[in-house]
Image 1 (cartoon, rainbow, N blue to C red):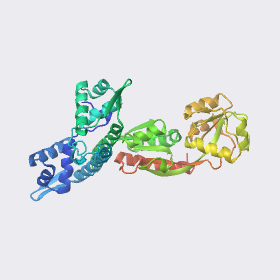
Image 2 (image 1 turned 180 degrees about the horizontal axis):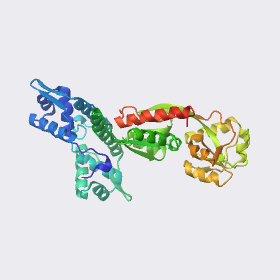
Image 3 (image 1 turned 180 degrees about the vertical axis):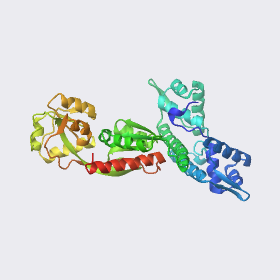
Image 4 (image 1 turned 30 degrees about the vertical axis):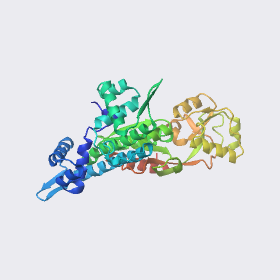
Amino acid sequence: MDVDQLKIPELSLRYLKAAKCVAELRSVTRAGEQLNRSQTAISKAIIELESQLDVPLFDRTTSGVSPTVYGEALSQRVAMAMAEFEAAGRVYDQFKKSRRDFHKNPLFSMEISYKRLAALIALYETCDYSGAAHMLGITSSAVYNSIRELENLLDLALFGKDPSGVNPTPYCKILVRHTKLAFSQIRHAADDIASLNGVTCGRVTVGTMPYSRTILTPRAINQLLEDQPQLDISTIEGPYNSLLSGLRSGEIDMLIGAIRPKEAAPHLKTERLFDDKLAILARSDHPLAKKKILAPKILEELQSVLPPTGTPTRLLYDQFCTQHGISVPAHCIETSSASMVRGLLLESDRVALLSEHQIYYDKKLGALTALAIDMQSTYRPIGITMLSHIRPSPAAGLFLDKIRSVAEDLSLGIS
C-alpha cells in the first residue's frame, strides 16, 4: 500500500497506543492489563516500534521500564493523536445517539488498522473507488471492504451516491479531518525524535495568501534552506477557505498573510507580525505617476483592478471610499492574482489596489509604482495563522523563527 501521497505514517495505531500506555504506567504488565492484551503482545509492539523508528523507546530495569527521551516524545504525540480520535468520537455521539460508550469503538480508541483509515481518506479525496484503489495500490474491492467495515463499526453511512459519483456524508467530512490531524501528529513524532539527535528534518507545508507570495515567504524559505538544506518545504496557494480547510485537517502547518478576524475562525490562533498599508498602484509611466499629491477623489475617474468583493482587502477599500465620499466603481476588474494585476497594469492606464510589498520586484525594476494617494485607514495586520491546539513540528518551528525574522526586517524597511 502506497500511502506516501496521503502523508499517512505506516505505523500500527495499536502499537502506538501500547507504547503510550507503557510510558504512562511505567510497566508492561499494567499496560497489558489496562489494554486487555498479553504482556507478550505489548512487548512485541514496543520492539516493533523501536525497530521502525530506530531508537530505544524504553529503558528496561528489574524494577520496570521507563521511557527514554524518545519514548516521551513519541508518547506526547500519540496523546495528541488520540485526542483527535476522541474529538471525532464526541461528534459521533451527536450524530448517532448510542448507549455504547464511543471510547469502546475501535475507530475512536486506536484499535483499528491505519490501512482502513487510509482507504477512508483516499476515497474521500478521490470520490471514486477505482481512483482510491489506484492511489493506494490495492483493489477496488479492498477499498470497498474497508469502508463497509468502518460503516459497520459506526452503524452510520460515510459515503452516499449521486449522479456525480461517491460523496462523503457530513460526518465523514468531520471524521476525515480529525483522522488527518491524528496522522499529522504521528508523522511529527518521527521528526521530534530526529530533532533529539540534533537533526531537524521533515516537511513544512505553508499556505500562502496573496500578500506573502512575493517577498515575505520566498525570502524566509531561502534563508531557512541556507541554514537547513535537509528540510523539505511546500507552499500551497488558493482561496482563503481552501487554505483554511487544509490547515484544519493538518495538511498545512500554517497560513502566512493578512490575518482574518478571530471570530470568523474558531480554534485558530494568530500572531501579528506587522501592519501593512494598502496603496494604489500603476505602471511607472502612467500619466499620474509623476504627480506629488493626488486627492482620493481621483479614483472615481480611473479604471480600477480590485480584490474580489467580500475579501478583507476589498472591505478596507470600500470603507476608504465611503470615508472620502468616493463612489465605488460600478464596473471594475476583480482578481486576487498578482500576476494578473501586473499584466493588466503594464498594458493600460488602469490602477490597482495592492500592498507595495506585493510589487516589490516590479517596483525595484521600475515597472510599477505607487501613486501619491494617501490610503490612510487601510492598514491590515499581516501574520501567521495556526491551529490553537497543535504543537508545531521542529521543522515548522524553525520556519516560524525565520518568518518572524524576515517580517521584522521588512517592517523596518530593510530590503
